[in-house]
Image (cartoon, rainbow, N blue to C red; front, side, top):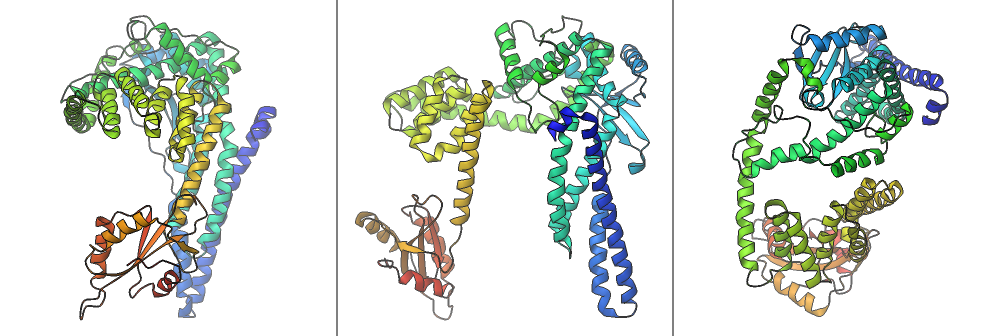
Length: 605
């Protein structure tokens, strides 16, 4: 479908529209069929009461479908601003709108998000009569120049002029309808719902895959419209600045604000008021180039309808250009005095939202710092045990002297304990997170030595290669993580239960381990007999799954009343040699007990 979208955009677009129309037509046909079935069953019920069940079933299914069809798009949230409050902003909007000959925005909303967008909400539901909303994030306006904001506004008006928002709403409504219908039928299965869900599970993923390229083409068209109204340079600068500043906010600004919770019990800060284009002391050239390189290396994914930065710049035939606004030239000046009042409003709202979590984090930090001081004191005379040394490194990184000290501790632990896979893993993890290539070989070594590290280690390697712009290597490790996770899920499912007819093997414990287990079992009060076997498993056969079958000594006149107490003791007081399932074969599972007794050496008590 992506190939058709590229080679024949018009044919592709009409194919998506036809597919969406088919979806709505299918829903309409389903409703009409259920109405006809309901009318037919009512007519029969008038003659015989036996048809009342059919009336109830068809009516219930019809109600489920109608509820799923009632999809209402809610207006977006934000602080409204008028032409009287921001005449420069609205004059710019009017000038752009006149050049595109498109409808006006009924409301302009300022939001606390680092984003801009246009939304159309139908006032009459499926009958339309749309209200147009323009959403402008105050943080974004403070990080781009007026010329760059003009390119952003032209992009959003380009969406409006071409009806992208309306089509997007139509597609979104269809997706949401199918999703709600599937959820409703899964929650309350009705007669005939199985056939409907089969159709849903075929159509919905197929429609999503087919319509995804449409959203991306819409972004390219809006970029082209913006370049026509402004310039390719302005669009390229806007796209580049937004990518770089998004990384700055995510990596530096907001973490810096939240880090204050370590030392301040109350969030007495004004992050939106204090947000401006960062000074040279906060962001140097190396940081800017690193963020830009990461943005250009980031591929287009199915997690976002927007194409990646590299593809958007290529479509414009433009180069990436970082051009942050100088002091006093950021686009938020178009809001006039409202810029400061809006920032204060968002600050107050932010403090209210984070107050509880901020206080909890502050208290947690004080506890962790106390633990850090304790471990530091105990580490002075001599080295700590492995787990406590790893904990010390974690605390130093998060609450102490920082990553450099943590790295030194982890390197020291690997030197001291070269055979410890866990020590090797935590060192490799930090190196990979710091984009240090030395972590690659270390993590690969940890994965080879310890299968339990495959999923987490593969994900770390995937993210590392993705950040380095190596999609093939990233894909390889992603596949490794997915494959191992699937294997573990299958193994977990296989090991979650036993049943008659499973293949039982002798337990295989050596004499010392068996002696220790029997000694622990003898301390369980009320335990009459115990059998230990192994279940033959398909997944992870190298990891044994033991099954302990027991029977309890019955109390007089109370039957199996003692069994729960014995089960609780086995679960909490007995240390088993590996993963073990515990089964009562007293009065229940007697046939399963006979299978265990047939295994050589199964009875151990």
